[in-house]
Length: 302
View: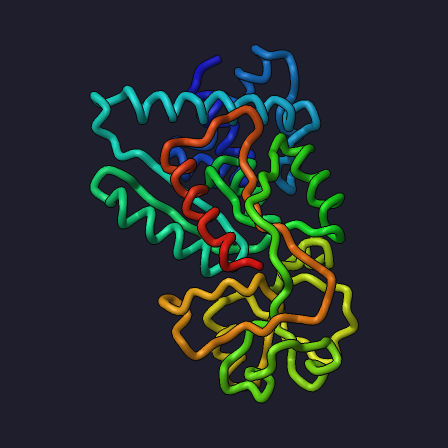
């Protein structure tokens, strides 16, 4: 069993087909199939079920893939640190729900450490994709929120994926809107005040369950609601349609501009902002520094 074989198995699982995996690996499909069969024979189990419709990972294969990913991740970390005389760029990547402050913290980090030595990646995406990115180590850290409503469901998924949620700070709930909205100058708002305005919600794709919503009060019976998957579109809808969304109340005017505001919502609900990471794997130097930047927003949260 070699690192190359493990990386081949992971690529096949990620690609969902031998042909696509072979293209990504720049080898022929027969050569890849033979390599996978040789590995399966060596370890004494079938990693994939093959059919005319493609391949599916077996339950035993899923377990094997978990170990394979851990081994290749550790190998890549060692190679980054000790390979090529230590001259290779170090990598740091973050996935997050749509939080401007998490992007702002990332920008600060990139400016501080510079891009000559480090290769940075940041991804704003759906809740389950944040979890998947950290599970697969596409991202070292994922920034999400939890509250009393979604904690059990998301917590169970994290445990099954060998991930952990580290709380950063608690937030009251705010209504985020354009300053041109007729309600923008109020000091406190109720859900009844908002009834005639469209609520904006980030679409979660196939996992569009209430538990994966990025906005609290996801089960509320909204009179008007618009779903989209882009933060810039959100901002346009706030201006064009007087739309609003529910958020932590942390505003980053340098990125969003001065045209937006947050008004406290009259509710006892709260949300806990935190980050997810792989269990038993310590954060990198940049990971620790990024978390420290996130913690600075606690003073704006309550």
